[in-house]
Length: 92
Image 1 (tube, helix red, strand yellow):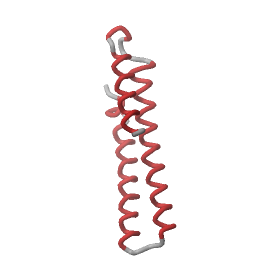
Image 2 (tube, rainbow, N blue to C red):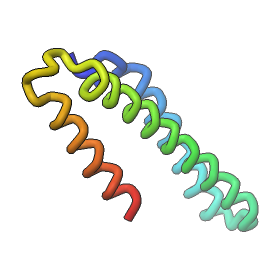
Image 3 (tube, rainbow, N blue to C red):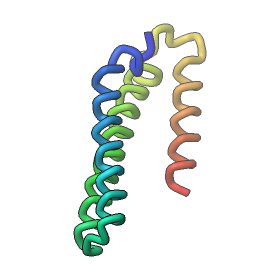
Image 4 (tube, rainbow, N blue to C red):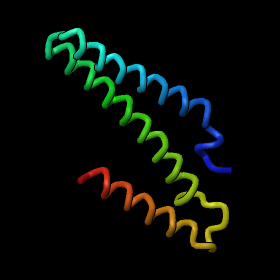
């Protein structure tokens, strides 16, 4: 079972909180709040996204690289390659 399926309720709750934060940014912009207020909300949303990414990434490493189901089936190499591709995309 995929770790994202196993942790689905927890991950979805985090995504919903992030959505709420993004909607808060939108409301602040529409209400013409000060730039400092908007920046604080952006920082909070970015931190929440980073936390979500960290959690999913940690589980990916543990499930597919550190403790794969069958270490001889190429799962470890595939998991590492997927993670490298994601990190390259993220760090552009």
